[in-house]
Image 1 (tube, rainbow, N blue to C red):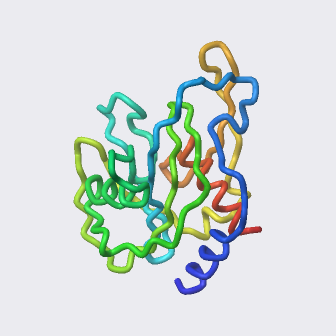
Image 2 (cartoon, rainbow, N blue to C red; image 1 turned 30 degrees about the vertical axis):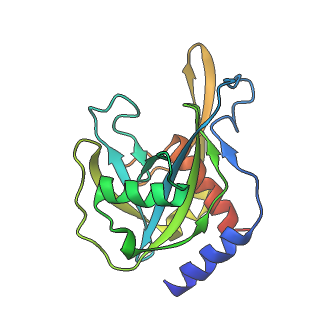
Length: 192
C-alpha cells in the first residue's frame, strides 16, 4: 500500500490537461451553457479503488458505475463536497479518508465540471449505502486500473451520430463514460 501511495502522489504531481467527455468526440458541438461544479472521491482502500453502481430507478445514469460524488453545494469547496457525497452515498466517514489531492477537472456531456479527488481510506468502514442512489459498492484492484491495456475505446450511435467513449470492463462491471475516462487519465499519470 505504501508503494501505491507514493505512486499516487507522484501521479498527482504530474502536469496534464483536464479531460472531457468530448475528448474522443470532436465532431460533437459543446453546449454554450456554463458548467456546474461537481466533485467525486476516488477512494482507495487496501490497494483497491472503491466504486458504486448507481440505483436502477434513477432518472440520470441509472445502473451506471460511478465514483461517489455529486454537485458542489453553495458555500462548499469541491473537496468538502466529494467527502460529503461519499459519506451520504456509501457511509464513508470523512475522518477515515486521507485526501492526497485532485486530478484535473473533467467536463461531462451533462454540463458539469467534475473535480476528482484521490483519497486513501485509512480505516475500512462498514459501508452503509443510500439505496435511493446506490445499488452496490464494489472495488477494483488499482494494479488492474493502472494497466492501460485494460482500457478500450468503444462506439455507439446516439442522436444519429457516432459517439466514442472509454471503457474498462472488470468482471460483471461495465465501467464506461466519465468514470472510465477519469480512470484512464489516472492510469496515464501512474504510467507517466
